[in-house]
Length: 244
Image (cartoon, rainbow, N blue to C red):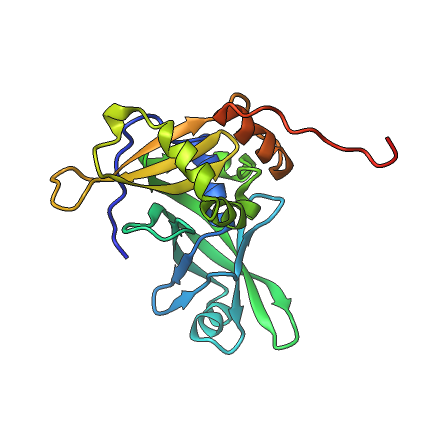
């Protein structure tokens, strides 16, 4: 997995750094916990609770769980990476690191898993907006993008609609779209769609990202079709009501 995150050619970040970090953690493709003596893969076994704290689940018989149960608390680092859900040469969209202290919260499940909470000391995110430190209090009160839980499915579905992808590609200004460049759907959030423009083979130019902004931010995934229609200049869709 490449570590390159192209710089923004135009402003592409949506939300505050704390909101972007919360969004990244919703569906991160790689989440790794490091303690002084152990490493554990946490993808699918992490969540941020209503109190704004990151919780992780560790198999009770794992080395990290045994170490934590023995010590009571441990210094820890959590690394997370976000990848685009559709194929492209470089799928990295963002990386994050959180440090703090892990403490045991309890056991969960039949097997069971040890649930631990990270008391956050520092956090930072690296994405097209650069590398930004995040205040723990800001992280605790931030909310993820409303499309985050559904983004993977929505973006994959959109990528199979060749005519819509072609229309979106046509909205990229010519100065940002070199001849023979490949354009991929990179991100979908409440503010719009981000496209990654990949320079043709042999070019010295690197990839760059371009945002196509919705007229108004989305509040939920059900509004996506109407916002896309408006973005592409299509007539509004008629809604049929049974019995009328």
